[in-house]
Length: 117
Image (tube, one colour):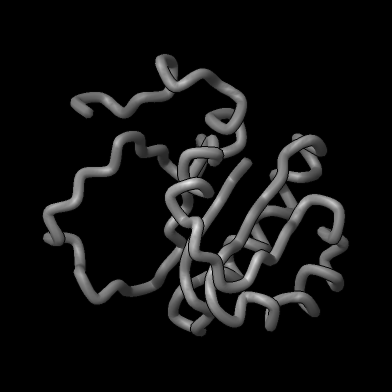
């Protein structure tokens, strides 16, 4: 499962993730996407227009974010900007270039850990 967690906003980039999901779903029809966050239901029209109803779940506001992240094979942060910025001090456990996203979704973590992580 590919997941993102963010309240809906134009600058959060969920629409870009949904558009990219079309290509991923074509190549990997078994791949599922979960978008959690307040007001993500507003993206239902785009999901329907792109024919992603079977693979894209718009979960809305959730209180079980740690459970979602634990279940995700890949976490995507498509934001165009973030309040914490690139120097937030967070270290993500695995990172992939966007070009490797589809193949990374189906590899074991030991094969996909980013160098130096």
